[in-house]
Image (cartoon, rainbow, N blue to C red; front, top):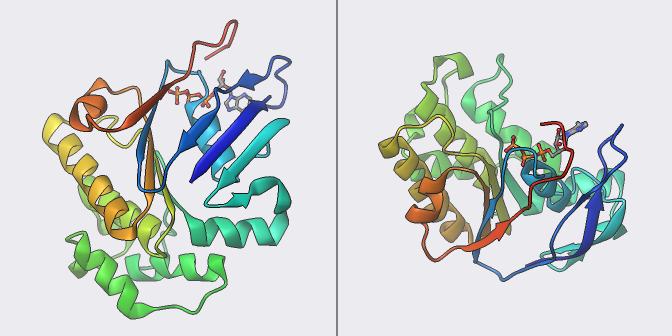
Length: 219
Ligand SMILES: Nc1ncnc2c1ncn2[C@@H]1O[C@H](COP(=O)(O)OP(=O)(O)OP(=O)(O)O)[C@@H](O)[C@H]1O
């Protein structure tokens, strides 16, 4: 499902690129991406989601060689294939939750499916929130909406960046269970970038990739 070989990425202004170990992740498998702050976890997620292009190496996700896609085709592929739960949920303040979710269809070039939006919010226990505006959500509700938006189009890959940071133990357990259940319902592989040790304890069967400390990196 995810296959990477020889990946390297240098952020603008960085002379020494980040180099990543090769990864082979099967369909439906869960991967924990661990490593100290600045080791490149968010960068690796962005590479695999096609949000950044590596200077060296190959990435195949769900059978697609990412180097073969550019521009609008890459955007449509990402919208249909990768569900992203970002560190911070970015919703349009002027749109209701349901209208925010509908933007996913626009990005993928597909017609809006109101029944699917309702079903997905319902599966995450937030069906009543479709007509709310983003500022009317609690932190926990916003996280459920973030997961709903990520799984709405039935992605093959669900990625979450530090989903439990700043959550207490009960909320962290809840969020991880939500991610696992949502990935399993969508038939998706799940990748969680985290330096929270509670995540590995909660997901004992997940594969783990530990990124090394980057020498000389300013974090
Ligand atoms: N836009 C950017 N421009 C320049 N350097 C960047 C940029 N984004 C990240 N970096 C650098 O790249 C390295 C990896 O950053 P990244 O955010 O991928 O690490 P991380 O493991 O996710 O860190 P954290 O756990 O703190 O979120 C760090 O040294 C960081 O300072």
